[in-house]
Length: 237
Image (cartoon, rainbow, N blue to C red; front, side, top):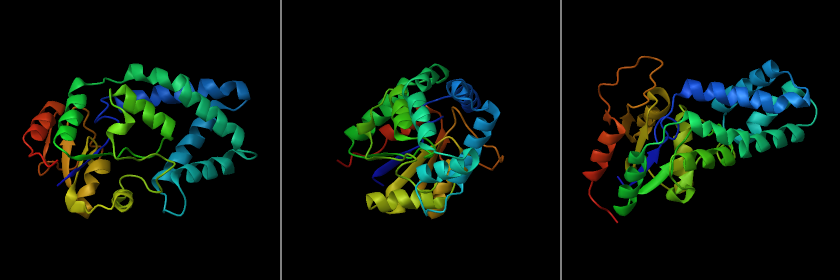
């Protein structure tokens, strides 16, 4: 094993995901209200676009899948809407840092792994554009160049829990499953990596287990436990 894949929201960036989503949608609705778009229609459209990305079949990027779906609902030119969204991510979206709980332990986990020579990949569900993903990396106290690869909706054509999401990462980085361990807090989304032969570690600080799956067989623990796990690993670099 020489490569760590990390989820972001709820893992490297501790948060109450329901609160985050609520504040995100409220902010987006306020941003777009002056343009005469009904907030309820907007939120419904974003959810439809998100579902389309989660069910993406690889025929196009998640970005194109989202805007293709949104365009069919909104009608007309999508370019204007995309500009508004991008401006939101540059500005109002940054206030969402206040509903996250960055942990210094995360920064230490990444530092130790880098010192020991491990490759590190940010395997966050690619439902957001690069600008929003890089912002959340910074909120966590990390830098984009801490990672060999970062999944965003521009460079990905599948989503978790589809195992093809993980296979796409492996293909892009010329890796095999046995080289990798997936670290995440969502049992369904993150632990699905085991289905293609990756090792896994379930972070329990912000645990999500919506299907009440049995988690007894997973390596698991808090971020502090994860740091101890990392410290016990041999150096490979």
